[in-house]
Length: 89
Image (cartoon, rainbow, N blue to C red; front, side, top):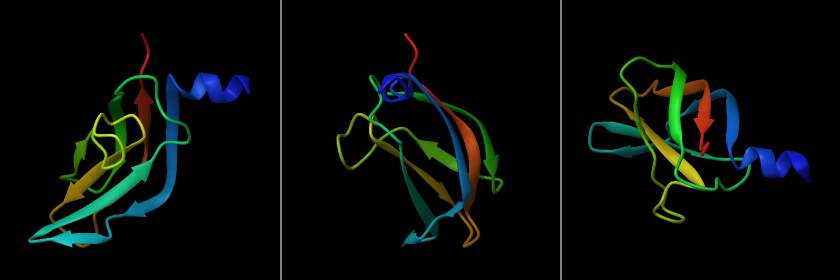
């Protein structure tokens, strides 16, 4: 229970090369869900993955970016491996 409350403020994302799977024009899109819904829209930092990625703090689920985020890239190899999700005070 305490871990769940802490994860509302900070999460270190470590994926297994989460790949963009949706294709829109010349852009490949990936969608990552947080372990728990964040208390506010978080900042995304310290990312590793394919070069040229764009990170978007919004989600189809709630529009405020508290349950997930998107990333996009111009190549079929667009992927994300790690980063910090921070919604501190």
